[in-house]
Image 1 (tube, rainbow, N blue to C red):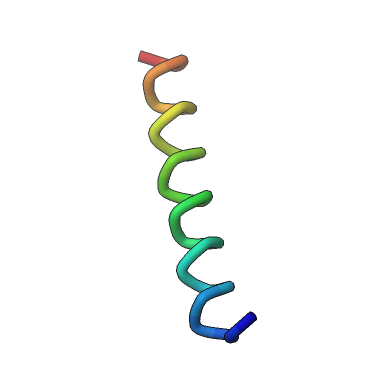
Image 2 (tube, rainbow, N blue to C red; image 1 turned 180 degrees about the horizontal axis):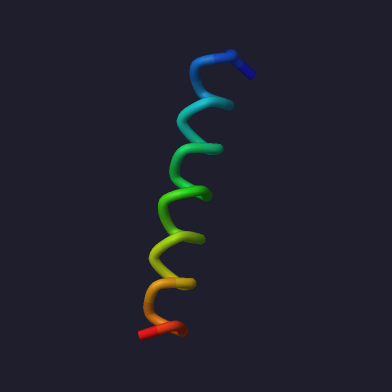
Length: 26
């Protein structure tokens, strides 16, 4: 896999994880 692809996947996981945390806290 490309480093760019890995970075994109990590960013997606981070954004989705943060969104889930925000929803739980809210």
